[in-house]
Length: 284
Image (cartoon, rainbow, N blue to C red; front, side):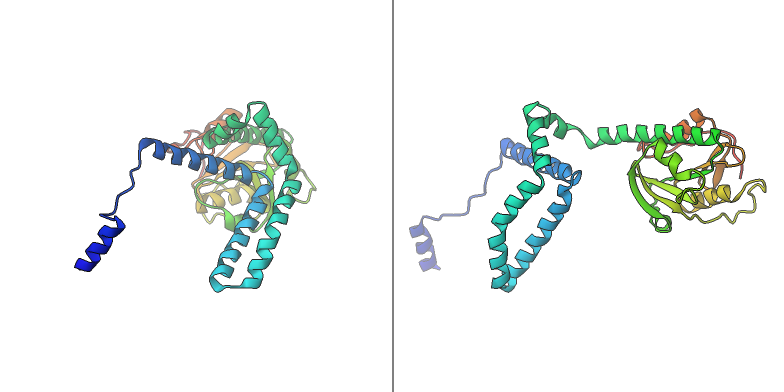
C-alpha cells in the first residue's frame, strides 16, 4: 500500500475531482436538446423521415458489425458513407432550399419556435369546422354518413376492417366518400389526429333492447361503436337528413350545427380538459 501511495504521489494524483456544472452548462444542454428535438420533428413532417429511419437501421447494422468484427460489412459501409451524403443532398435538395429560404427571410427560427400545441389547436378547430360543414351539406342532401372521431381508446380493430386513407380532412373529401354509388360510401369513416384514417369500416351493432325500433342499421352501428370505445360517432340519416351523435352508448338525436359543435368542442381534439356532456335530447 505504501508503494502504491508513492506511485500516486509521483503521478501527481491526489484524488478525483468532481466536474462542476454551472447554470450556463445546463442552459447550453437544454438549448441544444430543444434544437435537436425541433429538427427531428421537422424531419418527421417531410420525406426525410423515411431516410432518417433508414440511417438509424444502417447505424444499427454498423454497430453490430463492429461488435462481431464483420470487416467486409464495415468496409462497405465506410466506403459508401461519402457517396450517401452526396445522394442525400441531391434527393432532398427542395427541402434544404426551402429551409435556407426561410432562414434568409427570417422565418426559419419562428418556424421552429411554433409549439406543437398551437399547431394541434388550429388543426383541431379546422377539423371540427370541416366535419360540421360536411354534416350540414350531407343532411340537406339526405346523404347517409357515419363518422367516428377517435379519442383515448384506439380504433385500430375497426380501422383494419376498412380501407386506409390517411388524408387531410376536408368537407369535400367527407362528402365525396359518402356520395351515393361511390366505392367508399358503404361503412364508416375514422378520423384520427385531424386526418381521415380509413373509410368503409364495419362497426359492431348494439345489443341493447332499449334502442328505438325506428332507428336503422346505421344508427345501431353508431351506438354499438360508442359502447366499445369513447369515440364521438356522428350519424347523418339517409331518410330524414337529421344529424345525431352517439357517445358512451347514448344517441343524441336531431342536433343542430351549434349543438354538434358544442359536443365536438368537448373532445380531446380541441381540449384536454375533462369531458362534460351537452345536455340535450337523447334516446337510448
